[in-house]
Length: 550
Image 1: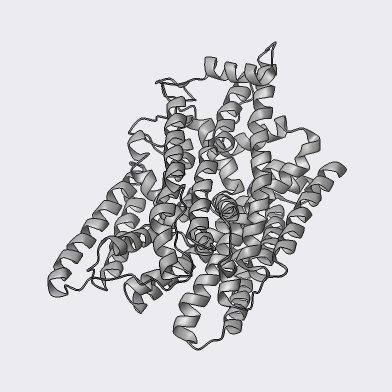
Image 2: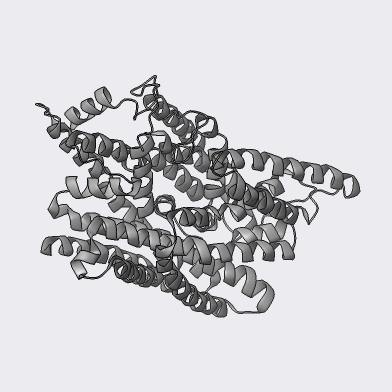
């Protein structure tokens, strides 16, 4: 226990020290300095921060729980992120940096009008405060409790442990997000990302070793474990799920359709993601960061999906199969991670939780300050005033979400899932508004508002009446093309009345010279995506038989 605590505290302090050293001389008295790290982030920091912003402890437990239940099809969430990062690098980033924006709502305001900007800003902020940040806090706290038994160590109830962990996560995350600004968040994400890759990859390595020994292998235990997995559970290694599959499986027709659209929303228009790209020192570094991250997402299945299948095989062999998805990964960790490494793994898990929390909190602060306060409350606010407002409102948002987070403990699991899915009520029309605005040059000012209202009605109706019958990715697959088609019609009708086209202005915020190896990196990424999918298919180590054990 002493060594576990020592390694946990040691790595956590190391992250804090590195973040402090890397940011202590930065000028955070301006809005760009505080909210966009002075527009000076290099590619490798952008890649690390993107990875950690996307990855949380809930994903480690949740996605591995899904693969324990239905096999490898949920790995699509990782693999499909790679082509989405390509779109971010080659299409979105050049346009975002050209406008010199700080937030996505700001871009929507430039393309449409001020009232549209206000609509989307308020909707985004409310969803982040009421749904996304509390869910991150609660889920991260519960994951930490389930793996490390904090309630048992402290001698408190599970709910009390969740409250304590929510407060700890909120306080530490707020220090980075509120007082350190975006650069402190990005640097800490990068260091935690290195730790996560080490900690995440050691789980399948140790798990295969234990599986090989348990199966009675007489050679190298890791190889024996993989051989046992392929010979006895090849159906679970198949990533191709039937078209009529329901969550948590991913139906094969949705992989590069609905799921790809969902990925575009996350990687190309989600404020907490693209804010790292907006903070790049130039287009070259932005494209490097996005494409580096694509490679990291491709290998992510090894610690976010494969351990779940190993857990199923190991528990089946031991005769102690768990009964719930969210129990699979915690039990696997407790069995296979050597005691001397548990402290380091705990620190890595905390870093993943903190990253998701402080990234979204920083984004909410940015949107409120730049899109609402500066635009509608105090147009003449000084740079110093904007930074102070950002910090003060960040404290308020952190307190509010810390109060709401533990209360999710009393909600049914289905309600929590429903609340989490509410993010799509705003996220998908944001994608339509942004990409449609770039595609169609004659859109009327009201078009994004119409799409927002239409989407909320249609997607909300789907959640209420059809969610139990059809996979939600089919709804995404249908709605995005329909919404873009409506925008096309608006564009054609308005073109006859107002023939002048919208022209995006280059404000000269950063150098827009692209990375000369971007196309080589893109080709390599697409080849890697194809290779991984072929490997985990009936043409590789999977079989066509599809099982859903639980």
